[in-house]
Image (cartoon, rainbow over all chains, first blue to last red; front, side, top):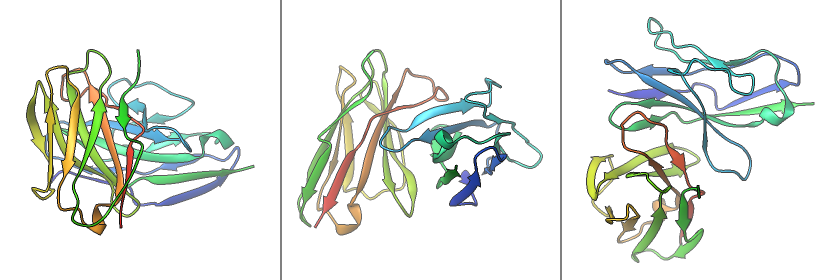
Length: 106
Length: 113
């Protein structure tokens, strides 16, 4: 079955601390993976996709096919990073995880 | 370009009624997907339309239906509303290919009483 698992509902860190939001997927084919972010009172928007191999707002994510993971990382969290983060798997449709709320305290 | 537009923003209905939600995709986008977002379940895929045809469907009962018009605008209908249908319904569009990113609207918040 195609599935995306985000084990943490809430992740709280202090400003300047490293952040890692976990994402594991289940898919037998070649995966297309995304991270979406939803800031307070804003629409859900794409943060990054694995195929681009970019760093957006200091965030990176590496696809690990052996561990079927696509964790989102940032070395130094900022208060403005506080948001809801969703990992998504693209197959014939886009399947989302249940999301992780990141809280960055000053 | 204007973003994905969903109307109305808020709806309050009673059990047993039906409701229609509307979505206008980004100009040039031919694919429209619908998702149900709830605090407990996150984003659940409802269906995707492409060129007026349903291309994919999630695991929702037949009370949930949709359609797409020739201008790519889409509507979603829920009949015989239940309390559990209360949710934020999100529409998203993309150009055409399966793995291109989705662009989301602000959603329609449906409350069933």
